[in-house]
Amino acid sequence: MTETTPLLRVRDLSVTFPHRGHALTAVDGVSFEVSRGETLGVVGESGCGKSTMGRALMRIVTSATGSVELNGVDLTSLRGRALRETRRKMQMIFQDPISSLNPRRRIADIVAEPLDAWKSATGTERDATVEKLLREVGIDPALHGRRYPRQFSGGQCQRISIARALAMRPELLICDEVVSALDVSVQAQILNLLEDLKAEYGLTLIFIAHDLAVVKNVSDRIAVMYLGQIVEMAPAQLLYDAPAHPYTALLLGSALEADPDQSRERVVLQGEPPSPLDPPSGCRFRTRCPDATDLCAREAPVPRDVAPGHRVACHFPRRRAD
Image 1: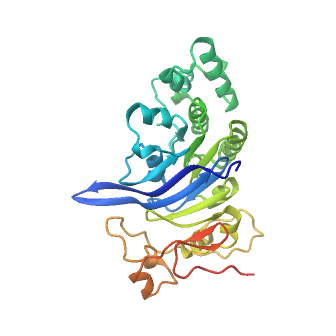
Image 2 (image 1 turned 90 degrees about the vertical axis):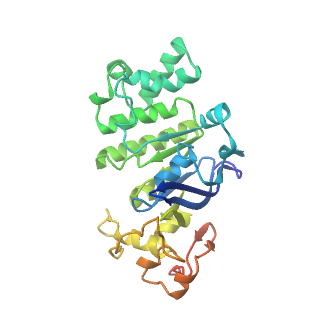
Image 3 (image 1 turned 120 degrees about the horizontal axis):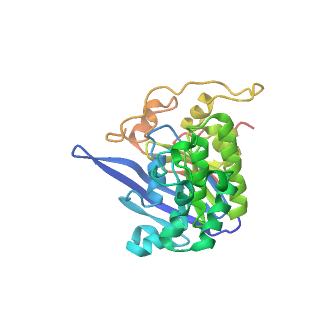
């Protein structure tokens, strides 16, 4: 983090979708800030709203309420060309690398598409920029620039997606499950590549994933989502060592540990998340929480600080063992 003023400020962001005459709230009142040069990890079970939140930040889906400020400019208030110009500073890498690439276009043209759309580079400058980007992500433009996405593996397609995202020199890069569909060895290559490019381009990252081990290794802070809400946020190591929310503790306990010498107790997170069409009263996690009481059913917990930089929405946060 190089500045105290946040690059991204999100306030009370909510996203709803119509569903058979009802409103499905996929993201509900999310608020957070991301500083320049920071990597914010976002974790949670499938269906918790983390990918929808990332798309709402990009304005791919429309938010029902709240604001998304990039460099102090509220994207939710912009329309037309003003929105498109501001959004150039934000780019997103999608979960499925193959389907995110146009199958009818060659790789060099896919990476050059943002440059062509904004006419930010033409002729030899355009070609040189594309070649540089492809080389930086480990794709030889001379050998592969004229090939189509179907001729590449999933890991290679993800590298091409990263090159395309960097074409406009964004300040913020949203990575949506960028390694979830890849082999472990390829995951490590992509994560190392992102770290190198972050340093080279001065990027700020929002890293969305469900693998806690991956998120811990790449993030400065981690936000834990459950049923559309952020239930805990803390520096990565602190959250991993001393989770305050029962949901976070159960997620960590159910995760596979690569180090056989680690003594973390194995637990199983029981039950399925409730339907976002009819969430529980009070605390949304109470139906699966071993610590729930009547208070949890009556009142929704208000997020509060339990340590410097450590915020949790729980009536009975777990205390750190000294």
